[in-house]
Image (cartoon, rainbow, N blue to C red; front, side, top):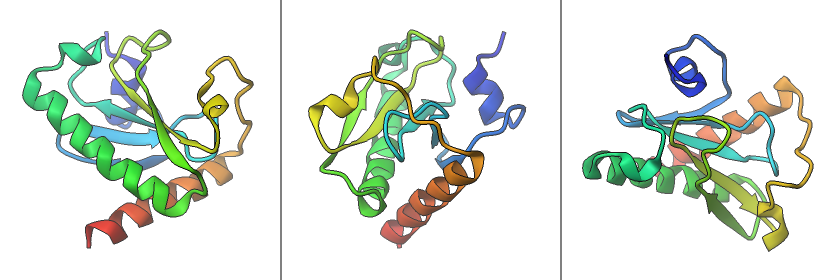
Length: 135
């Protein structure tokens, strides 16, 4: 059975897409820790990130690098935090979280409640930054 992330990438479930490559897709977390919290999800459906074949693994991280640079260019933060957890969805994914302090990467904190319109605006900002940096 396909994971929720596979269904998102296949267009069966809507998302606020930030970018896409041949090997991965990036979209906003709908329960973000901070404004711009983005998930980078490999298209290959595996439960654990380190179970990806080496070439897929490298491609996903290279893609995450581009997404993080785009995030830094438009989201006020001190750095982009990275977390690989995978307890809620059995499909490998990387959390990219704009941080102002270490505490911003605490997944036990209450999540932000953003409207779909706000998420769409944030996704468009990040996508635009990624495109600008690629030019």
